[in-house]
Figure 1: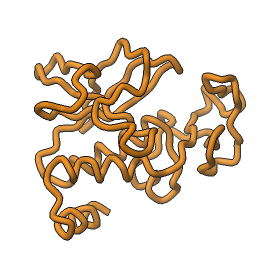
Figure 2: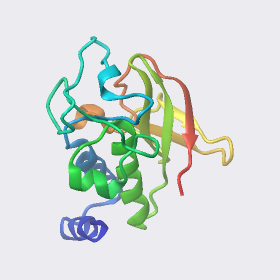
Figure 3: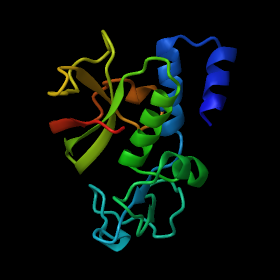
Length: 178
């Protein structure tokens, strides 16, 4: 899979930021699907508008599908995400982060966790100089680096690096994944 991304980057002669955008947009491209474990089953899920997802574990347009009993941690691995085409905020962000790190192009990406008006949320964090939107970030207190939030659940340019997708953005922290 990573080799496929490398080939696209080479064939299209993508620069650093174009390659970054391409990888993240591929993670954004699948329909959102809730991924839960046994402590928060699909039957208990409601979105911010009070709508319940279907429980068939299929990628569906709003109000989305839901996959129950995904252990551990209610997160699909990057390969499971690619095969199933189903994922939520942490699964999509983990997929993008893993691909970026495996490309060995110098991408500095980590997982960000915090709160938005819909509740707990995860995003991809990217450490880049001069991002287009500079107000949504989390500091890594271990390294002093600033990771800008990139929403992986929204499609297209409306969810560009650091774009203000949510009105509330609080208690964000960097969680390095090795």
